[in-house]
Length: 379
Image (cartoon, rainbow, N blue to C red):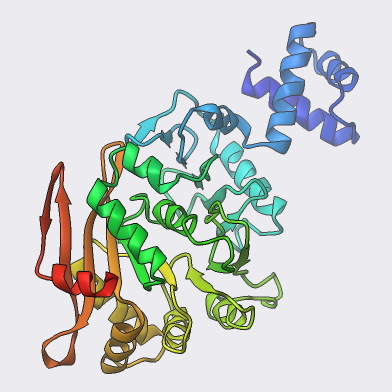
């Protein structure tokens, strides 16, 4: 195993003389810098330079772990990965924070983004679908921090959720009925709970004759469906031009003849345009939203409505006629499961309320006060 110092010495020597990292040039660099030359060492250095130039550097080996969903780096000595059991320490490290920074800068540059002292954080989707976020040391402690969300290699079906224990038989029947009847819905949950994964599974149930137009801040949804169009927002460039917002995309999506309009995550002013679309004949719209339970969704929607200039009363009126069902997912150890299903209604004092219709805790399920309301929607 070649040391990080030797690798960096050879890399700098090649850069100074403008040499490409070929096997011959690496051998010459080793000799000229007084290093011991062996065929094994030359090959190790070649692989190291290629890895650092093209992939995720020392993190590449973590991508081979079955089921990995997240990789996070907290400075050079703390690397963690998540395979469904929560974050676990990885037995790898970087030689220095400069190496972490170089990886972050290169990943950002590969998709035309900046990560430097003038722009010390970045959020982007890499060409291989990995969602990448970076914050430079000085802003973050204990050093440069990188966060990578790894897309699933395959799209889970609803049957996969059922066989894995994440969706029980009754919930599966309800979810299929929601999709079949084109009932508008939101999936709520915390970070990493499986919101986007479940949404992709439900979109795969949409008849192939229907056109899906998906709007996302960073593209993650990839349902198994033959007629899918994905729109992705874009930040401004270095001249503060070229920004494409989620609101822009929702408006454009409405002109693309969607049979179902999907907003990957509702978290800003795009809520207003989504509600207007769902209230003007666009059935079956759906998306995800961050919330701790279905009971928290009304307050969350009210806050998002305020961002788009809607008063609480206007938000309540628009939501209750546009979005009918809310589905909440939680993560219990390695299992992500549907734990609550509710109905949005206009309650006392014309306020928006989320009424629990069905819930699950472990293997126990229970009907809530909104069960008959849900049954009326799905009949």
